[in-house]
Image (tube, rainbow, N blue to C red; front, side, top):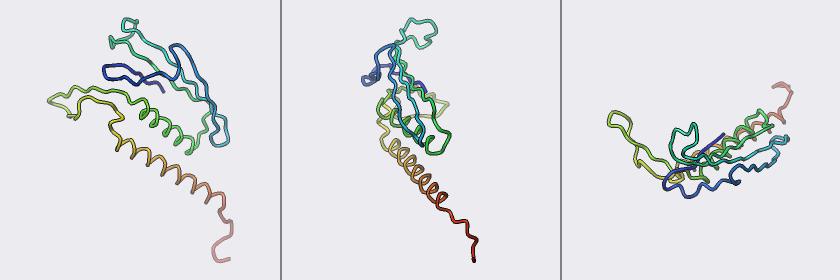
Length: 147
C-alpha cells in the first residue's frame, strides 16, 4: 500500500527512510518469513503527472511472502491502522450544499482516536477468535457422540 504526506498542518509525516531510500524488515507470521520493504520518494510540485500542484512525500510499504490466512490478514489490518494512527495524516474536506456534510472539515486523522481505538479492538477481538478457533480445531475429537 502507498500513502502520501503533504499539506499545511501535516508536520509529522517523516518518512521512515530518506528520499529514494528503502528499508527492509523481516518478521515471522504463521511460521512463514514475511518481508516488508518501505520506500519513499519526494514528488515535486512541478513533476510530470503531479495533478495536485504541491510537493508531497510518497511512502510505500510492500509485503512479500504473506501467508493467506485469517491471522495474517488481521496482522496486515493491524499494521495498516497503526500506520494511519502513527502517520496521523492531515485532511481537508470541502462540503457541498447538495452533498453529505463533514465536521470538522479539516484536521488530523489521529484526531479520530475513539474510532481508531474501536477498529484496533475489533482487530484484536478477531485475532483472539481466530486463535481460539484454531485451538479448538487442533484439539477436536474424532469420537462420535454417544460412544
